[in-house]
Amino acid sequence: MKVLVVGANGKTGHHIIPLLKAAGHTPRAMIRNFDQRADMEALGAECVAGDLEKPLGYAVKGNWTVMMAAGSGSKTGPEKTTEVDFHGVLSLIETCERMNVRRFIMLSAMNTDDPETGPEKLRHYLHAKAGADARLRQSLMNWTIVRPGSLTDEPSHELLDIAPSLGPIDENTRISREDVAKVMVECMAHDNTIGKSFDVIDGKIPLKEALESI
Ligand SMILES: NC(=O)c1ccc[n+]([C@@H]2O[C@H](COP(=O)([O-])OP(=O)(O)OC[C@H]3O[C@@H](n4cnc5c(N)ncnc54)[C@H](OP(=O)(O)O)[C@@H]3O)[C@@H](O)[C@H]2O)c1
Image (cartoon, rainbow, N blue to C red; front, top):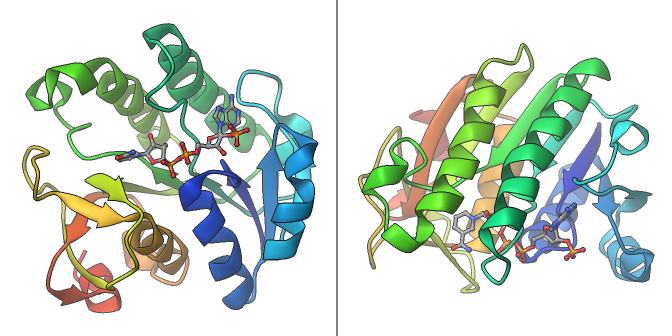
């Protein structure tokens, strides 16, 4: 199955691409800088040009599934957060609808169900992500919203806590990017995750068992 990975060159995206390949899919890396092409191809992806701040029809066309793992990042200002994480992702969702994408797996964040209870410095970002999640929930695509705690670069443990809500973000609500990538790819094999939003952090339950409980 052709799977477009938006944010493929990001730290989580780098884990998603080989996992998709290993699961027998055809990963397509959406990149905005073709200097990244050799790296993406070495991971097993086809590359397509695309930028969330520009029209996306060319990049989205022909894909059955889209995984959204892009983000404006913590070093940009609030305008860029609104532009990329809200307007850019809305544009992606609406392009997917027009191009008959059937499955959309969103990498969101904990606390987007109630941004005002999140850390003050994250609230603008959480509102932007929450707005994009809300638009996705109105979509007729088969969507899943994965909401991790703080991302780390630690190795995967495949032991998680997953629930519709795991409370506000704190120093214990962490998860590795590799485990988030595994959860996103496993969602494709778990139709019980369709139409669901859930928080995910390091925990005690094996990954597949945790996903099956959703
Ligand atoms: N950091 C956390 O603790 C945390 C917690 C929960 C959720 N999240 C979410 O998890 C996701 C992935 O985080 P990460 O740390 O793995 O990402 P990352 O390493 O910061 O990578 C972000 C990716 O987004 C791409 N991107 C940025 N602006 C774009 C645009 N206009 N068009 C297309 N692509 C664009 C970047 O492209 P370039 O390579 O071209 O720059 C990069 O590949 C994000 O959605 C983030 O909001 C993060």
